[in-house]
Length: 460
Ligand code: AMP
Image (cartoon, rainbow, N blue to C red; front, side, top):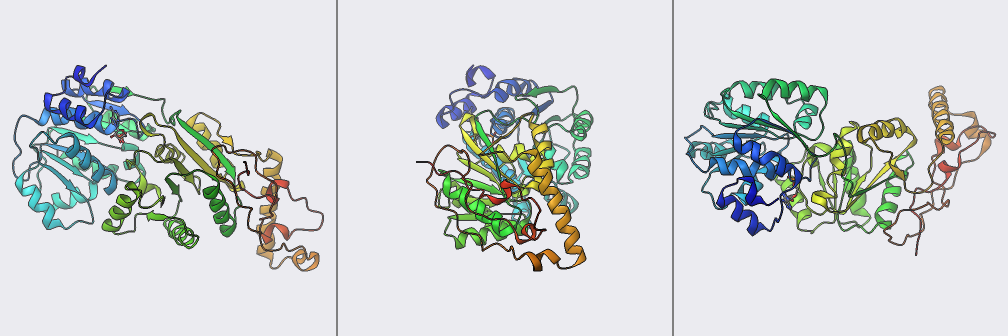
């Protein structure tokens, strides 16, 4: 199948050829003809599948005829985050270079006045985050009564971020006769309900199994200690051991993103950060530096990183397992994009085992351990130890701490590791467990896996 066969306009097809895409991806083959026919589409596709072009290319074709009026956009694309909206904007610019369409971007962190000027000129394509769109609407600077094409991108992320009520409000402001396209990487029940409500007789286009991760991604999990310092050391071991061209490290909390940025900078890693509290200009600058390979690593929170198109990230590292299991799919989808190979490694503490199982249920796959898998007994024992530790803390200083004198020497630095492509058994070497765990009674068993480094094996 060629782009030429999909029914796209000559201008679009020529631009695609110039960019160098030789064949449409499966989502493009499935969605483009139906979008061109005017059908509503429910697209279930993970990031990296060519999803953005699957709606951008037919919309550009359709918008070639007709003109926009001041403050009355002809099409509206809603995205959950500023970065994702900016990326869709870039896609419209890139694919639409032969059309004279006006494309406007409404995101937070940019002056209202500048955005109003663009709206006043009339927008064929309006790309927005829900909050900023509603702000403009409420200021009377925007009317949605001439929107012919309505796209909701990353719907499941909109759900996570609490945007569904905004989307419901926005959809009521758009004529019922519009064509609606809804894209989501996963299909939780809430999104099914939303799709029923917003789409009329849609074509359902599903490219990969729901919530699946691309088969080109080599996924591994590695045991990591729970203590903050030890866990950061473990991360450094991983970074030093792997042949990382460029990578994204995910942490769950903004505070941890900041801490990791500082810590890894001190340890001379080339790194930038991306989280929701940063100024828009700083986020854009970091992203641009990362895309241009001026920095090798990006430490990011989910919201900031969702949907970012960075074509060739070699590694994704989950410093924390995501709290929402479906986010695992999105995080891992940052690598192995558009058929390339990729690597994802997740650090798993014994507190994470339940969440790991949930993630494995979502992706319908067991993730392989990099190195020796701690046994279920190990985890059972360590959970007990942890419960008892908490109890002892509650009671005050442990008598064992005073009497057993078993405090460990400060953790030794793990032996430098040779960079290797394969992740195999860890060396049972350095002791890196916390004083809390050591503080149990003389006869308490400490499982072996708690006493070993999380480091990857040294291979020559
Ligand atoms: P997306 O899933 O929309 O984030 O796209 C992922 C990446 O695939 C982007 O870098 C696109 O530029 C690229 N891409 C989209 N369609 C094609 C295609 N047909 N052939 C090659 N690359 C593509």
